[in-house]
Picture (cartoon, rainbow, N blue to C red):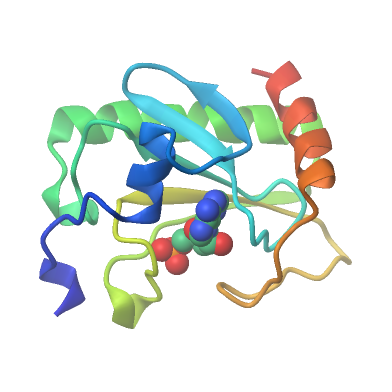
Length: 144
Ligand code: AMP
């Protein structure tokens, strides 16, 4: 059952943390990495992960690591709010394949919602244009 999977160091976010895979970075410390989702549900959809916690989901991260991660989610979401001026912001986090999780390194989605615009459903969007991602990322970075 994917809720109890062991942590796989070859998962795509582990590769991004090691620098083996590229990403459009928003924010990085020794503990935290925030980057743009390459299959965005809306403009500004980004992800926040803990770099040291080898946690597949919410149930195998320490309280201290979760505190650092959730504090970072609030910080990045505030920058998304200030820079992109959405009407709402959805914070999402999936545990287990049955719940929609596809990458088994714990992560939080920050999804700005714009009234009147389409929000793609989870896992249904095509890949974003890299230049457009970078333009949006630059706006968010300036608000950090
Ligand atoms: P989840 O389905 O909740 O596990 O979310 C995984 C998210 O990672 C999805 O929204 C994907 O679009 C996103 N994703 C997958 N591969 C990459 C990648 N290489 N860089 C950025 N985001 C990715």
